[in-house]
Length: 223
Image (cartoon, rainbow, N blue to C red; front, side, top):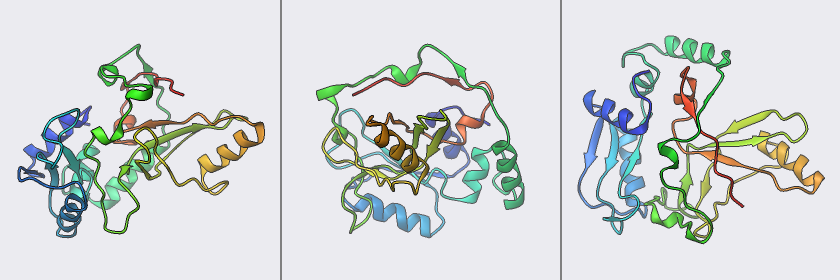
């Protein structure tokens, strides 16, 4: 693996000719999503939108999309050359899935440089796109690792579930009771009359986490 964070991954794609920087002003309201979809259909590069209407300044001013939008970019993310065969990639991922890698826990890290709590939480500070014409809102969770734990067996699950901005500090998700692993966990917590703790990891899950020695920090508790 040749990168350990998103900045390094973007730099690697840029070096490989797999990134296009969009400097023209683009709206987060369907325009960004339409451009991303068309480029993906044309088997184009990953895109870094650098000028988003209404987000010229502030906490976040850019949106990166399609980092894994081709087999070649997926291969690069796994440490393979861009022209690696599907067979080699599948065998590699299956091998990783059989491995158990103990996490390296550290006290803190750059991910905790900025911690926002309570009334200060405002997800609209981020230029989250409304991706498609008929969608109900702005989906901020599209490739997040949603983590829950079975209250009885203590087995942990990480799943990918889409979630959008509700209020400025809430994110509604689709949770199918019993039909998804976190839905099964939810039923057990409900039977106990307890709220279900949930954590979300906003990064390239399953790829970065497969690296031995990658440092992890504990999540910040919120209510």
